[in-house]
Amino acid sequence: MIFRYPYQGGVWVDLEQPSEDEIHQIAQEFSISERIEKELVSPTPIPLVASEENTALLVLHFPVHGTENDETKSQEIDFVVGTHFILTVRYEVIAPLHHLKKQLETRQIMAPHALITADVLFEILFVHLYTSVRDHINHVVDQLARVERDMFNGSERTTVRLISSISRQFLHMEAALADQEEPLERFLLMLKPRKFFHTSFTERTEHISAERAQIARLVTTYRAVAGELRETNNALLSAKQNEIIKILTVVSFIFLPLALIAKIFAMKVEYMPFVDDPNGFWIILGFMSLIALLLIFFVARKRWI
Image (tube, rainbow, N blue to C red):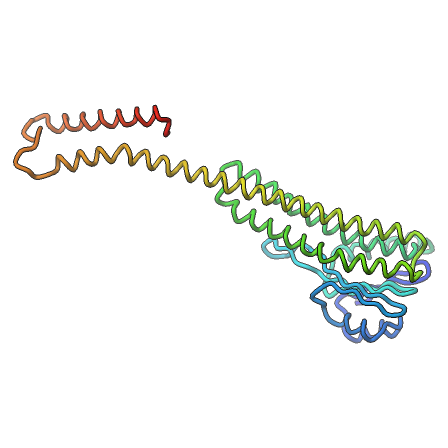
């Protein structure tokens, strides 16, 4: 699918899940080199920057919310910039670009002659993409807040897996944003001397870099928060388990002597005290109760319970 939006002095062409014929058609139209065309045909597993005489290519992967089990996945976008065009290629539906297209279509209907400049469009593209990443971060942060509430409400066991899942999502986002840093900076530096954009392009590239850096710092901060919550959760879980073990130990400490007394009086020997006494059972039971009370008093004085 090919979408076109004109700007002052050029056109933005967006290819969504393009076929090889569509890519070849666009490459012929804008004189894109065969090398860059080959990169656009299929997804690229890692970020990439390439340059030809009149065009520059940037391949980035943006972390997004997955459809299953709250996983974070990466979506690839290829940017090709030339003298009179901006080309974006994506191999699946990417929500922020879809929303941007709708906004531009509305703007084109409402003000068909009020075209934006190339550098403004370029900045808007990245702002929408990083805003989507920020929304994903906020979604995971909401999950983290719910986990924190559950953790301090006594659900330490159930939150262990959830905190690990959230930490993994932040880790994937942090890695994706870190992988973007060097290629994005090289790409922006590569574009500056080529006069593709307006004189305000330098300021707008700084805004794009600052947006990526701010989101990267946000992810790093929340990943640290998730790590601290995991340590706190482990401490609470360990404390609860220690409390259970302490209670079981105290119970054993009290009942072990009583069991020993019962075993002694159950021995079959010729003479056993209180066996022939009609009140022998109650005497032994009272003796055992007295020992139990003394042990409970001892445990209480030691503050074991």
